[in-house]
Each structure stands twice: as structure tokens, then as C-alpha cells.
Amino acid sequence: MTRMPVAERRRALVDAAVRVIAREGVAGATTRAVVAEAGMKLASLHYAFASREELLEAVIADVTEQERLAAEDGLLPLGEPTDPAPTMAEVLRAGLDRFVDLLVEDPLRERALLELTLYALRTPGQEGALAAQYAIYRRSAGDALETAARASRCRWLVPLPDAARLLVTITEGLTTTWLADRDTAAARTTVAFAARGLAALAAPLDAPPDPAAAGDHGPAPEPEPDHGPHGRPDDRPDQEHEEHRAC
Image (cartoon, rainbow, N blue to C red; front, side):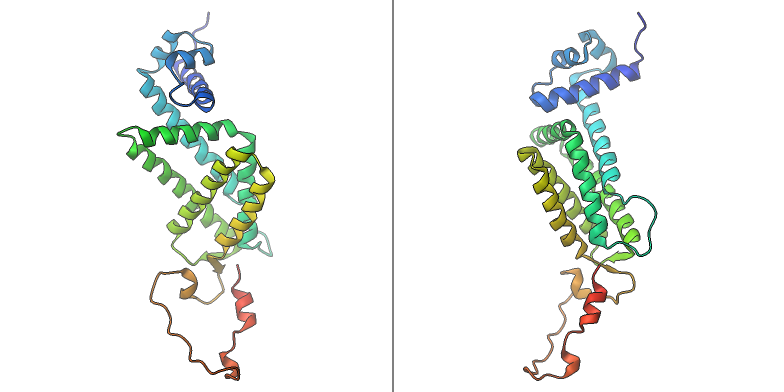
């Protein structure tokens, strides 16, 4: 019988552990349950991993990396920039729709990731690993938002890390809600709302700076004097300017 290389053995055991965790939780992912899922003997696991804890660490690293790749595949705009450029809302909606596609395609990975997140929250000493996991997600989200800005020829009105954190919050909410109700149509409705809300934090590159649109990042502007219903014409909002600023 040909002996399986260690790298392949580790890969098979990690994949088996993900399936067991998604189905039975981390507590159910005993070494015996994992090797049974992988169709191996118990000795095979100890040949590839020194302990169950080392196996779980490998599972967390693998699922985090797969989640990062899935997020980038889903959220990054496809193809080269076009002329005319799509709006930021269109770019974000397309990316979030692809994220939902990937979620529907592989819910097992998402269930396992949720179980592993709860495990890390309950396990002393895992706080750093969980923080590092979400730092990876935020970096990926930031990369996606930078690419979306280039594709739509827009700029962000808020610090990119803040927008990236919001995007991670949106995708986390989409994931857990869909896992709970499996309502894909409702998820896509949420995507449309979320894309418009996130796009409101951006403006076209050629729009003049508007500090007020960036939220609470500086002192509020002085209020305009009230000239009553017959105020000067130049006190009225410039509709063309407002439309020009939409991203």
C-alpha cells in the first residue's frame, strides 16, 4: 500500500475536521470522530498532528484563509475599469451578491467558522488568535474597498479602516442571518440596502471635498443664517452640485 504523504494526510484530516465541526460543533470533533470521517486510523492523525489542539489550530488557520480568499473572490470587482464607470453602489452590490453566491455554495465552511469563533471566545488564551483572524478580514475588506473606489472612480469620505470594519460587519451579519433562515432572496434585498448605505460614504474623485459628509471627524460647520422663505437665491441648495456629488 502506498503511504500518503504527510501534507496530503494533514489536508484530508483538516477537511474532515471541518465537516465534523460544522455538523457536531468543536466539542464533537474528537480525534476518533475526525479520523472516522477521514476514513483513517487513529495512528494516522498522530502521525500528522502532535495533538487535537494542533489539529484545531490548523483548522482555524485553514478556514480563516479560505474565508479570506472567498471574500476577495466575492467582493473584489471583476474585470478592468469601464467607461462610463459604474457607481460605487453598483460595484458594492455586485460584490456582495457574489459573496452571497459563495455563501450559498459552501455553507459548511461558514458553519464551521461560526463554531470555531464561538470556541475561540470560550477558550482562554484564544483571544489573540480571534483578533488576528478578524484583522485579516478587515485587511481583505480594505483591499476590496480600494479596488471598488478605483473601479467606480470614487474616493472614500471616511478613513478606509472604518469603512472596512463596516463591510466586515455587513458580511458577518449576512452570513449568520442566512445560516439561520436560508432566505437567499431576503439576503439579496439586504445586499441592495447595504450597498447603498456603504456607497453613501464615498464621493466621485472630481467632487469637491465635503468634510460634513465624512461623519464625526471634525468640528461641525457653522449653521447658515436663517433668511426666511424669501432668502437669497444663493442660499438655496445647488441641485446640480448635489447630484454631481453622488457616488
